[in-house]
Structures are given as structure tokens and as C-alpha cells.
Image 1 (cartoon, rainbow, N blue to C red):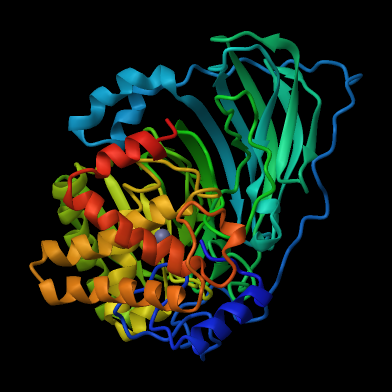
Image 2: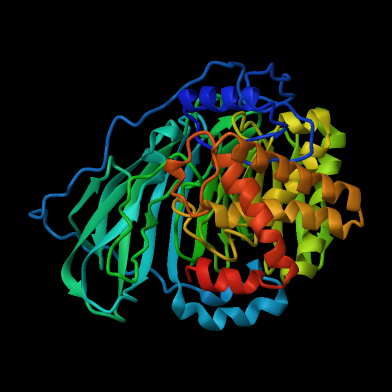
Length: 507
Ligand SMILES: [Zn+2]
């Protein structure tokens, strides 16, 4: 993910201009597409759908923060929640992958009960995590990440209460409130499990995509609420919880695969778009609904809602693809669906079959980047639909490439973004090759070569595994272009799986 701070935008824009770079975005490309770099201020087409009449940016920082609960608070036992329904998870997977759930003991389990309030721009509720200690030592604390408290999100995530095994537990925020420590009354032995409940509230900004991370924002008919819940931090093999400061460069989340069972009180006039599949829906007062979703094994759970968008769908190799687009962008919407269909078919044949029953493509106001990937859902910048250009195609197929490289095969995107970004960028070439369009495939390749050569000529070459915060001005050239060129011979030698299993696989 490219950073969103204006200072870095300006720097990147200057570098793009100086280098006369043809890249279409710092996030996706370089690509042969001839779209103006999105980091250069450009007039926006008027979105054909807006949830509110105002275009004023409204950043909504939370007034509260996670507060430690005094350990002297009397215990308040809560009723034991029902057992996690692993069998229900099958609905999110194609039948050929139902047997994967035999490995369910390897994954932690999240049960979320949520209420969305679009007027307050908030989603609140309770998270229940069934956590198993897979380390070799006993644990007396559990850490979560609170991604929306990173300043780029422009909103926040507040935890109001923590319970462990039904008893109140001490908790506190750390690392600029992006990490949450929950204390255990008794050490958790290796192999043992514990139930942790957190009451939380997340709040997004509105119409703020030009200043903040657009995947956590309400704008242009999309309320995107990515990474909205406390997410278990990773516990590394060397015995450390992941409490690193979060960097703007690269994607934000670094998380382990888990199972999700999510019940949401959805507001009237909004349709939910999430990771996973809806398995139940009950009417509530005033047109609201209570909807239940299951995810299958996923790296995180994406939640979004759309209002006033049109949709179209198709099915590829058993997976239903749904595209959501603004009513004025029918041609772009159709093109996004066709690109998704062709990409899924190409990658199924090249990488291995996509196991999920559904995949969503959403036209959204991202503004400072062109696309963003989540398990089972991708966001595509709205301006690309109006032009219906090759930039729309390459962005859609890049983000769908991430369904394999990031989602199915995980890597530490904060430390090694070149792994998933390189393979997703290389997937743009795979897509055109699968269509039999050798000219277009060579065009993508040439664009990556040009970008990398330009960086080298300017003395800005760097090793692929350079930490992202040490790539000022050459992040795109190294993390996207050079890595795509590196990925190509690996893939041609059928070494991609070996590469990923030896260096990238987190779990
Ligand atoms: Zn990417």
C-alpha cells in the first residue's frame, strides 16, 4: 500500500514528474496504461452516487481511547457463548475445499456481533476470540492490533471492556494505541485455549479519501470499514508478539489465518459487501436486517456497505463474482466484471483453484491509490471506471492477483511487501498471456523494465528485501517493478510455489 501522507504524495509526485514516469499508481503499477498518476492532483469526476449532500471532509477521531480496567473491578461473569460452528464455514468455500475444514484446529476463531450506524459513522459490538496458545511457552498476555488508530485511517478504534473466560480482564493500549495488551489471570499453557471478549467501537471518516486511507471511509456510495476490529497480533517463532510501529508504506495488516462467524445489524438502505458468504438474514425494524456471514479460513474479515450502486455478476469455476459500480459507469462496471472473470479463470489455471464461493469488486473513492485487496473483496478507484481504460483492467487483475499473493499465501506486508506486490504485479502479465494478448503482456513487462531501469539510472536501485521505510522515492520501482521482473523467471521455471513456501508462507 502506498502512503497517504500529503508530504509523501508531493515527493512521489515530484519524482514521477522528474522521471516522466508512465506508471499509473504507486499502489498498482507500473503498467502500460496511460492514466495520469493519481498522486498528482487531478479534477475528480462528480461521483454519480453520494451518500450525503456534503463534500466536506469530516475526519472523526475518537474522543476516547482504550482504558485500563482496574483489576479491582468485581468479576462479572457473562453467560458462556455457544460453541463455534465450524461446519457452517463450509458455505464460504467451494465444495472441493470443504475438506480443508478438517484443519480447523490450526486456526483461531472470531465471533463478531456488530451494529452499524451510518449516521454516527460507527460500527460497534463484541468480539469473541477463541485463541489457542500455539507457542512453546506459557503466555500471560495476549496482544491485538488496533489498525484504525494509525493516523492514516482518519478515524479510530476504541476498546471499552475486556473479558477472559467470562471474567473482567485488565487491558491497555500501547504503541500509539495501535496495539492492545490483554492480561490473563493465569498463564495459558502451550496447547491450551482461552476465550477473550472485547467490547469495541470503530468510527470512520466521511468524504475523506483525499487525505486518509480510503478503504476506511464513507464516500461515493461506499462505506468501507476495513480492519475495523481488534485483530490478534502475530506471535513469532522467536517468542515475540508483533508490536511494531505501523508504517504507512505497504499494506497495513499482518495477521494469521482464522475463521470468522459475523452477525451484523445492517442499516436500512445499505447492502453489505463482506469477506465470506451470508448464511442467514432476519428483518429488523425500519428496514434494517440482521445478517450472518461466515468466512472460511481467512487472513482478515472485510466489512463494507454500498448504497445506490448497480451490480452485475457471473460465475467462474464455481466462484460467484459480483461487481458494484456507480449507475453512470455501466461500461466500466461491465469491464470490471469481465476483467475479474478472465483473471480468476487465468489464475485458477496458473496458480491453483480459488477456494472461495464469492468474490466482490467494488468501485470506491480511494483517490490516492488505485486499488486495495481484502479476502474475497477488492476495492477499485472510481475514476478508472469513467475512462474504462486499460488502467481499470490492470488494476482489477492486480487486486485479484492478491487473492493468491497476500490472502491465500501470506507474507509480512509491513516488512516484505515486494513478495505479494511483485507477484500481484506479475499477475498482470499472466492475465494478458492467458488472453493470448502477447502485445499487451509485453507492454506490461516493458513498463516494469522501464520503471526499474529509470530507478537504476538515477542511482535508486535497492535490494528487494529492503525495509519499506528505507525506500524513499523508489518504493514503486523496487516493490512493484523490480519484484515483478524477479517473479517472472521464478514463475516461468515453475518455482513460484517453492519461492512462496520457503520465504513467504506465514502459516
Ligand atoms: Zn498490490
